[in-house]
Length: 226
Ligand SMILES: *Cc1c(COP(=O)(O)O)cnc(C)c1O
Image (cartoon, rainbow, N blue to C red; front, side, top):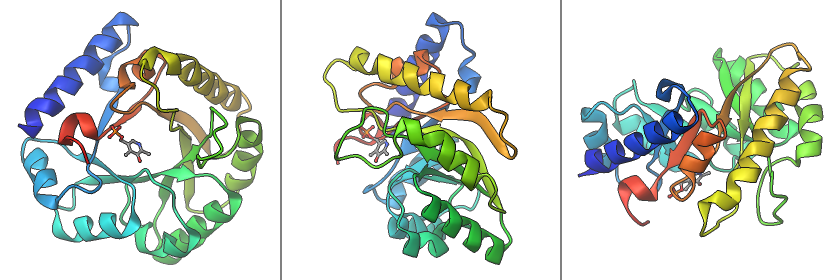
């Protein structure tokens, strides 16, 4: 059942790619398993799925301990500096870096544990009060500073778009996000790879794919309501 949902989303991603002449292989579907039991992850794992998304540190750590080690757990939720030490060697990539303070703490713990941590910078593209993320105009400055930190590898940008009923409404947000990543890439900052764009969720992942998403984070449409 879960695999059917997952395959259905994969097909929709492939359709969206075809419409804009993208290779579907460029898009990673992250199954957002937050609040769902480890058994559901295992069911998809056994069907070949490896990329999962969690938004809470403790939940990610608990699932990490229980499940096969070749699962790639993406941390997609807000991360507090005091929780960084639990996660740096368990998260495959941290999508939610939005301050220098957090980047510095990730770097510090990564050095201690002798690991390299892949991160994305979370951008509050729609400038919503309620959302985490750095404002677009502050993004380059944060990246310039964070890029100097050891054992931290900046790979791209992430955004959580507004909740909308018509997914097309977010196309402009996704387009601006892609443009921002291109602008930053052109600055050729040392140690920064603007290769990933993490954007699009259950309601708007096709719009995101058409605008260049490399990672979509889909929960409800795979696992059902939380
Ligand atoms: C929960 C969550 C998602 C998945 O949302 P759905 O609407 O269930 O697909 C994606 N990204 C982040 C950051 C989330 O917290």
